[in-house]
Each structure stands twice: as structure tokens, then as C-alpha cells.
Amino acid sequence: MQATTRTGGLITGWGAALPDKVVTNEDLVATLDTTEDWIVERTGIRERRVGGTTAGLAVEAGQRALDTAGLSPTDIELLILCTTTPDMAIPSTASLVQDELGTPGGAVDLNAACSGFVYGLVAAHGHVALGYERILLIGAETMSRVTDWDDRNTAVLFGDGAGAVVLEATGGVDGLLGFDLGSDGSARHLLEADIGGFMRMEGREVFRRAVRAVVDTANRAMQRAGVTIADLALVVPHQANIRIIESAARRLGISMDRTVNVLETTGNTSAASIPMGLVHAVESGRLHGGDLVLLVGFGAGMSWAAAVIRWGTGA
Ligand code: ACO
Image (cartoon, rainbow, N blue to C red):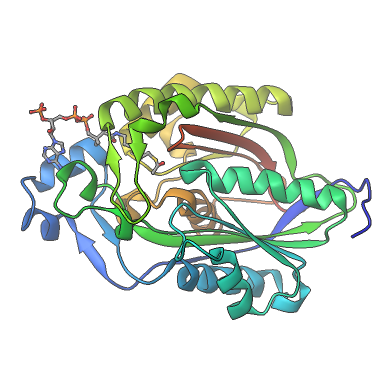
């Protein structure tokens, strides 16, 4: 494609998908040495959805995002699938999604674990700057496949799901005001899984680093966007643990009622959690044209990412 110097992209479509099967804390208490109270108090999670494939959930969420944007798959020039739970080692899961949806352009997987969707959003804006008109960006995960359901340290935390957005070039108004991407691979041992294996996690240390990473990356993104926390309508944080979100919100100086939280019913869905939070915010009427929103994620890697975006066209 001929490279251009176009700037400006806005989210024009959104959609989410969850598997039908609900696994409650009560279900987990039946097989694990844990209690309902422990899970709720330490994590904020009451239930999670489990099942399906990463590609299947991505297709469902992607089709919904296309529908709300009023587009058909053939309008899409690039499909970016953010996932840390691909369906196959080869090829990319994006290939399966591209084939199923029938999008004509490029298709690629992006893996930055729970920070993946924000990395993908920045990458999508970069492609818009190169001349792409319409991009489908999906975060989709089947964390249940890499979870050892006999390990109480991780089994209570994770779930499956997908969220998607359509990013369209505007030729003017820019939806991305500022961002920050980061990684510290020397800490990768804190949360890892071998190919075909289950996650191992040092939860306490991940927690400690997560709060710091969220606050620092959010502050850098806001500073680059030229905004302060008071300018934001909403913060959509990665949904790992309500206590991480509460600690980070306190340090950032934002009240919890200006954060978006879905983890009570979804658990941690890694790269799907931020787009699912975003979709929930729009569908419950919490986002209006021109609103400034901070998306902030952290996760395995360790990785972190934050972006300040302008919502819709009301700027
Ligand atoms: N039920 C009951 N007890 C439990 C459970 C459980 N499900 N899990 C752990 N415990 C025990 C521990 O063994 C420990 O017992 P001990 O004191 O006898 O050793 C005790 O509870 C306290 O353990 P902590 O690890 O200190 O508990 P904490 O309050 O830190 O909560 C948790 C643990 C929920 C894992 C928390 O540390 C956390 O959320 N960490 C971050 C995890 C995270 O966000 N991971 C995802 C990153 S995103 C990505 O990239 C996928």
C-alpha cells in the first residue's frame, strides 16, 4: 500500500463475546481448597465464563464490532488479533479469524499478554497513519486452556472472552492523544507457561509490580497526551484483580466510580479484558462523543501499556 502521512483514527464499532458456560466461585470451592469469601475479598471475582476457541470468540466479537460500525467484513483492510492463547502454534489465530469472517486484507496476531489490546490499538493507529482506512482490532482469549484447574493460585482468577473495535481513519480528528508501551523481560518468570503447559504465577510479586506499572504507564501516557486525571471521563483498566484497580486508582487520584469494571462476572480475560470493559462502558451509556478515556494494561512479560483516547466524533 502506498504510504501516506494521514493522521487521525476513531473507534466506530465495538462488540464483545463470552462463552455460554458460567463457572461460579461455588463451582471452584467444590474442587479446590478455597472459599467463596477468599476469592471475592482477594480478587473481586464472583464468576467467569469458560469455553470455545480463541478464534471462535474473536469472530463473534469481531462481527458485532462490524455490525455496530455498519460495515461488512469486506470493508476491512487489516485484522489485528491480540491474544496470548492462540488456538494453534502455526498458523496465527488471526488467519482462522480472517478466513471465517472473510476480511480481504492482512491478518496478524499480536502477543503482549494482558497489555496486548493497548499495544494493538497503538499499532492500529500507526497503520492508519500509513494510509489504512478501516482496521478490525480484536482481543480474544481462552485462558481456561492454560489454567491448571487444580491450582488454587491461578484457577480462581482467569476466564475466556473477546472484545473488538473497528478503527476508521478520519482524516482529521485523532482519537489517540498519547500512549506509553513498556516491557521488562527480566521479570518474565513471574508469570509464564510453556507451550502446551499451564500458567505458573508468583501472584504476590505480580500484584506489587502491577500497581506500580499501571500508575507509571498511565502517568506517562497522560503527560504525553497533555491531559491530567481530571480531564478523563473514564479509566478502563485491565481486569485482573479489583484490589489492583483500587490501589492504582487511589494513587492516580481517580474515584472508583470513574473506572470501568467487569471482572466480577468475567475474571481476568487477559487481552480481551480492556475491550470488553470498553464495550460495557459504551453499552451502559457511560461514554459520550468527545470523552477522554484512559486504557491501561499490564501483564505477563512483564508488559504494560496505556493510551489516552478521544471517544467518538463529538470532539
Ligand atoms: N484460596 C485460598 N487461599 C489461597 C488461594 C485461594 N484460591 N490462593 C492462594 N491462597 C493462599 C496462599 O497460599 C497464601 O497462603 P499462606 O499465607 O499460607 O502462604 C495466602 O492465601 C495469601 O496469599 P497471597 O499470595 O499473599 O494472597 P494475595 O492477597 O496476594 O492474593 C492473588 C493472591 C489474588 C493471586 C493476588 O496476589 C493477585 O491478584 N496477584 C496478581 C495476579 C495477576 O494480576 N495476574 C495476572 C497478570 S495479567 C496476565 O498477563 C495474564
